[in-house]
Length: 80
Image (cartoon, rainbow, N blue to C red; front, side):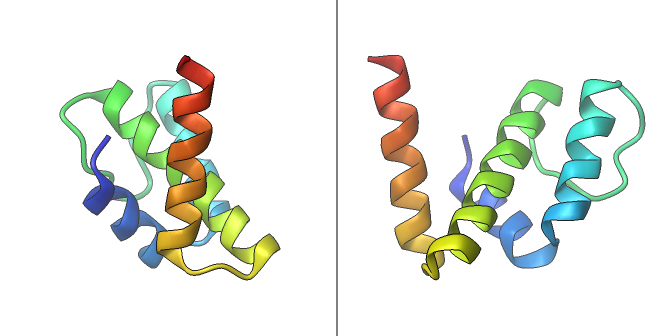
């Protein structure tokens, strides 16, 4: 997970475009937006994180850093 790549997605694309990228990755077709990552798995991780963070920012009126911390906490808890 590359925080810089996630931040770039959050700052550059609305949720609708991020979801289109998610769908493209799942269907193994050409991405409609530029997503950093060494492979499709890493790109999907970045897109899913950007979707979650963007939606959380909008719902809770949070800045990127606070929403990112909430996301990383959620990920840590899911793997424990």
